[in-house]
Image (cartoon, rainbow, N blue to C red; front, side):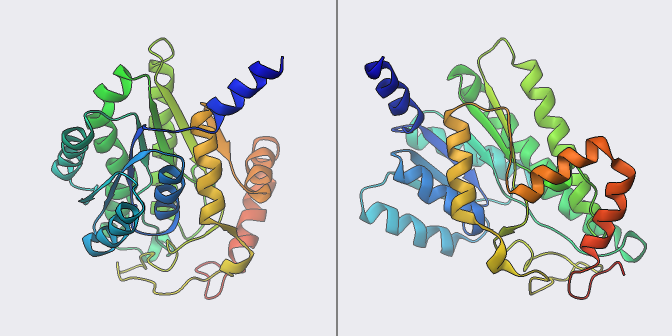
Amino acid sequence: MLWQKSLNLQKITSMKDKVVVITGASSGIGLALVHECAGRGAKVVMAARNLEKLNSVSDSLTAVGKPNLAVQADVSREEDCKRLMEMAVQKFGTIDILINNAGISMRALFADLDMDVIKRVMDVNFWGTVYCSKYAYPYLQKNKGSLVGVSSIAGFKGLPGRTGYTSSKAAMNGFLEVLRIENLKTGLHVLTACPGFTASNIRNTALTADGSVQGESPRDEDKMMTAEEVARRIVNAIIKRKRQIILTPMGKLTVGLNKLFPKWMDKMTYNHMAKEDNAPVK
């Protein structure tokens, strides 16, 4: 019936008054998620290490009447994650949605890599997700809310020259899968969102073999899905309570073909990554 379709559409397109915590919110996909959620009526709690950028975003949202909170936090530090959730609850009373978006990348062959680089990537990408999820968990479960991890195609297919990044995203995928299964009867929704290569600053800030910042992207950002489009699709998936989304045609093709022809995909992945400017693999 027409009225039923109208109600379903309203449910799908509304996040009004939901309290959403977003990590890595000062740039890229995280910043796009802030604007997407705020634009749909959510109360947004933004977290990142760069407080100056967060405050700028907060001021722009406040100026147009969008409720928000900016919190400086390094998700690799458990105490920061705990404080983030405490401040969110103190400000808005609860947490309905947690989007674990904070992440860093790296680019170097394992043979050349300082071990500290892998640890830093794991601390942010994996442990940051674990810490934030742990301290938001009671509120998410109580509200039958959504716990989201912004993962990567790298969590399904190992990328040469991205040892730490691939490992962290594979670990994140496994962590989220377990939480999804543990909550089959609680009503908590768990979403694993896997963008492909996205036009954001994660490659510019990727770590090199010695831990220094790469400084520029080895890829043509203009040909990639925008952060804004990724954010829109992630928010839609949250509202529809999907278990997993794989974005970009290449991402879907990579995951699908890897299930059928893993050995062939090893070669294809190697050849694809070797085309990057100054690629670690040749």
